[in-house]
Amino acid sequence: MAAKPVAKRLVVLVSGSGTNLQALLDAIETTGAEAYGAEIVAVGADRAGIEGLARAERAGLPTFVCRVKDHGSREEWDRALAEAVAAYEPDLVVSAGFMKIVGKEFLARFGGRFVNTHPALLPSFPGAHGVRDALAYGARVTGCTVHFVDDGVDTGPIIAQGVVEIRDEDDESALHERIKEVERRLLVDVVGRLARNGYRIEGRKVVIQ
Ligand code: GAR
Image (tube, protein in one colour):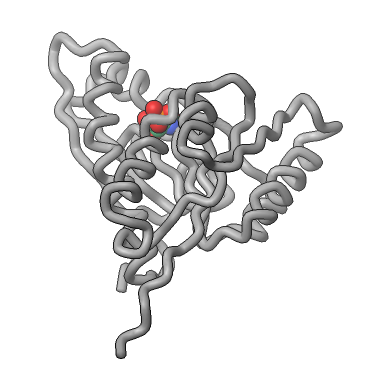
């Protein structure tokens, strides 16, 4: 008899509205955790009072908040964040709109299994304003990138990308909404495939088995 599939454990980190988190929650609810390959075991944030945390609470998930300003230094915050995440023993950690750069300790523990989604086609337009920067540059296409996190800013190995055309009438908000429609589908697809199939990182290449 074939072994029963086991759902991988995900911790999701958010800083804002959490629509990418919601897409993961909906996919898991619809598909079932075992068939999808993963379940969310906790949601963490770097700030309180955000819709991303409210979504997690409505889904009955444990949440935690780890704020930089509650710690003596950025290193102490990084260590505390790593501890808070580790307490849930995740197989994968997903940064879904988490607007903080993690440090050495976090990467030492979760490097190679920390996935981020970014609203631009990396390596173009890294950083906190990927949508605004692509518009200001006059790019005609942009999109989203799901990648593993390394010690640079949005520089880690790319797993998958989605393309979105920029329209003449776009402002940052309209463009970001269209990117997020593509991004949510991409993130759900990528996280499920990583969890179900396993993967290897070979230099800059990610091979999903
Ligand atoms: C997403 O578009 C994500 O790519 C972006 O924040 C948005 C979060 O949306 N992240 C970054 O810009 C990271 N540099 P959500 O809270 O509705 O999921």
